Image (tube, rainbow, N blue to C red):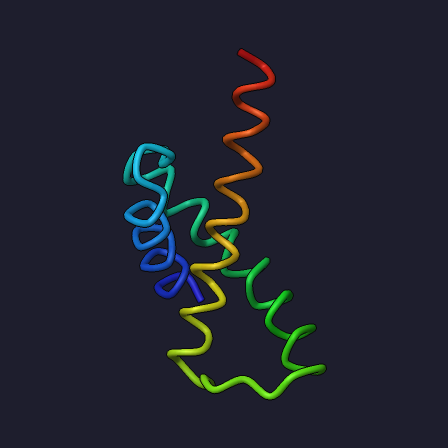
Length: 81
């Protein structure tokens, strides 16, 4: 889970150009995002048959979760500043 989270954070940082938090920040958000994404994926996969499963499916959901967390943290960061 940590390795997938680290890769997911890096990939999410690449997707969110200009919205990242540096390499270490992205990796930490990716690890947390992998938990969130796995939770979201579990809910969605219970309702719909998904084309990806296993390691690839986990990575995809981890990236989605990391992006969601980056958007939320970025929004909070803008509110505070």
